[in-house]
Length: 332
Ligand code: HEC
Image 1 (cartoon, rainbow, N blue to C red):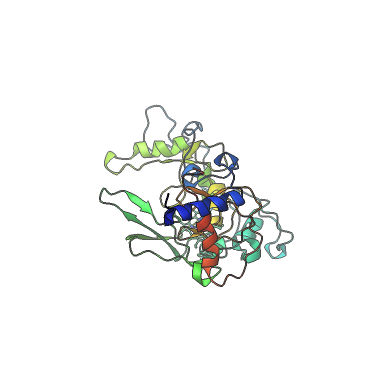
Image 2 (image 1 turned 90 degrees about the vertical axis):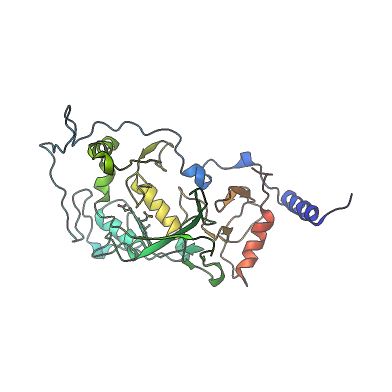
């Protein structure tokens, strides 16, 4: 039988796959999930108790209960009482900071400028949370926008750009900085909202949010989407953070921001950002055994242990091994 070019490529790929002992899909680590899996909840939201503001039989308008008082607000870098103020801010440094101990510790981490050594990259948008959230104090809103792109087909269905709708506008190498495809004509800029006071928003029960929705006039009634709490057991919660209410928990939002805005992987987001869907995350060691996804394609590729960020002559050096290792259908 004549061997066609395609077959040669297939055989080479299979040979390479065998040589590198690509693990079967069942070897996928439990925490490794495709983006679609990660953002699909496995169970509906659990009851979170009665709606506080509305819990009066037959009442659908605002009924503040006698024990509630307004939260303390102000652009003053002072705690609103949700967490202790903590040690004098000027005494906190990289070596003595305790991330969840106090407001001042949190402020330090939020303002910290992350570097390559801290895990920034390969593609990212900024080096610290405060780069985008700082008006007029750390945690506030700002003029910084991020860009989301994709395309919409004739039926109105939206498809994200390869690698996800969020464009990472910076990279650790010039060749891997993401570009917007001409064909991705659905483009939007989203501005950075304030995160101040979000701890209180996280405490609002789902039932309070849906009660507010239900009390709205039909014509302007909002939706209360259920989204998975990523650090939870897979069950959902009413989303409340982000322009599309895409997260219901601050740990989920922060870990998403660490990966997608700063390129820092973390226990909830183990896979590096791609460059327009191509894995450029590091250097391969052919001995490692975990599998990972490539962009939004859901294709598993042979894993890689990121041992270093090499100096590639070009990003293609990184892209080529990835492309060779993608074996659609073989690994599911
Ligand atoms: C490059 C700019 C940028 C950086 C860096 C950034 N953010 Fe954001 N942040 C945004 C934008 C834009 C949104 C709105 C995103 C959306 O809804 O699509 C947002 C939204 C949020 C929200 C939701 C606020 C609300 O009430 O809806 C939180 C919380 C948040 N960011 C926390 C963080 C944390 C924590 C970090 C650091 C790990 C961080 N952000 C880094 C731009 C940024």
